Image 1 (cartoon, chains in turn green, red):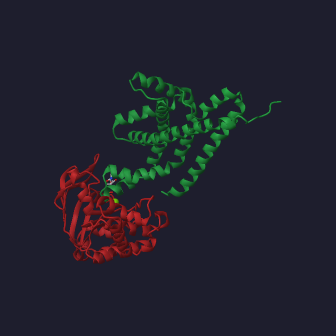
Image 2 (tube, each protein chain N blue to C red; image 1 turned 45 degrees about the vertical axis):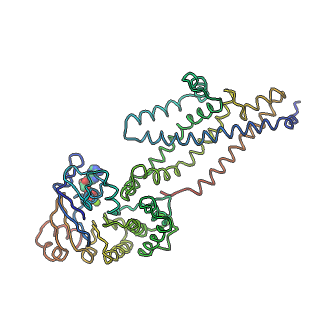
Image 3 (tube, each protein chain N blue to C red; image 1 turned 60 degrees about the vertical axis):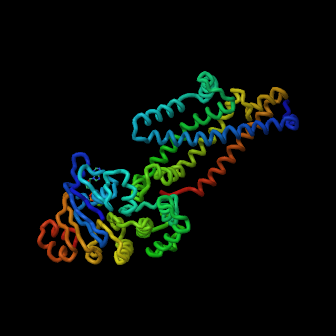
Length: 219
Length: 242
Ligand SMILES: Nc1ncnc2c1ncn2[C@@H]1O[C@H](COP(=O)(O)OP(=O)(O)O)[C@@H](O)[C@H]1O
Ligand SMILES: [Mg+2]
């Protein structure tokens, strides 16, 4: 019978921690970038310009109907062809941000649609410009509405980030692969990784519930 | 202060205001009456540039609404309160009051809060300064909206049926506030169906029907003579039970 043994951890835990650190770096950077991109594309999709709306729609449809792994390889091999030389981490961040921006766009867009016309008019009547109205009122209101689904997207982002090991990034998944090759203890190491991702996402969803309660609004 | 010069405004095929001309001075309360759908709201919305006019011109403080660059100045000078109040739901009452003077008039937070306390006292709602919109009654929200408009020190208040969505008790709270403001000399253009308010507070009555000005008279004459002379007006007043 197979007996589990976690002895290798004593030697390899720094590598795991480093991997977790890289995962954190990837997800935090992509979270910020993907959030901004999501807002921009959502606003484009609601613009009065047909061209902007079309670009936004194509952006979302392409990203939502293709596998993340393919998108990742597209950036990994495609960016250098365009003369943009990046390191794998940066490529990973770009791919993850672009990928999550599509989902973010859709939830932000429905948040924007939930904001009644009356709020715009009221702000215009007070003397705010279009941009100021968006900045001070419409976005703060719709982002509060969209907050929960946005955090779900973020959890997906954390999970997706594990695919970036395939472009040589040694994040959590990548470090697990290496350790398992050295130790021949793949079962144990993947148990640890599974638990690790679980803890990561549980903590995130806990924080998100807490924050959501504090910023929730009644329209 | 507000000069509406021969304006025309249509929505598609529907001409709502036809060659409409009227002037408002910097003082007093003008009540705008008329059956619904005759363009009263549209007139107010054209004055502060929420609707574009097709032809003619409106000058507020000498500035034309046709020039987009003037809109901010015009809107700061004409505070507007709508039938459906919109307090910003992510801000409490105090922040609803202070955000605009801070962002648009560059007041300091402290100055804005002092001004807000002054106006909240004026509308009798200082105790609600930490509340959100959903913790306030309709009448309270409307009083906050009026106070919020006053925060910008506008030269005139445009009031579009501000009591129509309220029950009688709440609407009398709001009308009392407006009466106090009128006594303070705040210039108001008010669309309303509250005749007792019109009689008590207004100095001038405009009557609109089908997009044109049927009459423009001092309040005493309107209720004493015009209502009997003009068949359309007497029909309207009878209809609303006055
Ligand atoms: N944005 C709009 N689009 C199309 N028609 C409108 C619009 N706003 C108002 N109208 C029409 O214009 C007419 C006048 O409306 P309004 O000014 O709101 O009347 P009132 O305030 O006197 O009741 C109505 O027939 C209304 O249906
Ligand atoms: Mg109206």
